[in-house]
Length: 171
Image 1 (cartoon, rainbow, N blue to C red):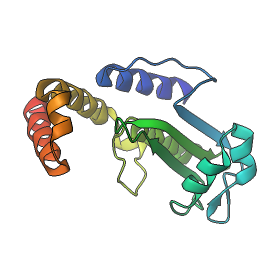
Image 2 (image 1 turned 45 degrees about the vertical axis):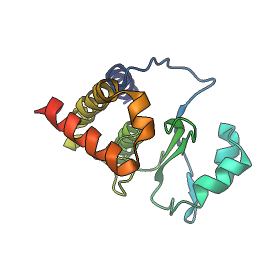
Image 3 (image 1 turned 180 degrees about the horizontal axis):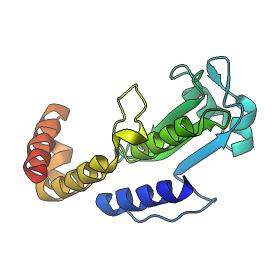
Image 4 (image 1 turned 45 degrees about the horizontal axis):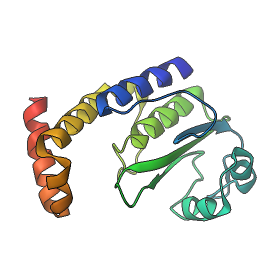
């Protein structure tokens, strides 16, 4: 699974035009496979601390919804840029291997800002390289439209411009 996720990270990084490095320090994507991930429907605070994340972040992430499934992802956005600053994916090591794989792949895709409003977990068997194509299209659209123009648009205008541009590129 590590090779598959590393390949996915590389593909999404290239498609998004952002460099990446697989490291254990100064991370912006943390993937934790351990047990127990949760206590009832909340994140396991001991595991959270062991990973080295702050209490403030714990409070924010644990209040976002139920973590009882043993698979959860949370992304902290950067208010200034609108981009994901830190994504965390937790998968309980007691889950079936296929479920762990789905959880980790879904968390990786979400860390690049894709599927961020979806409630269901992407299954690996459904495939995920369509999201690489989408990331590449959205990156190209950002360059075509121009970041300066995007900043001055409201959310509906941005959505409309991105949708039309991405649709044209993906045809």
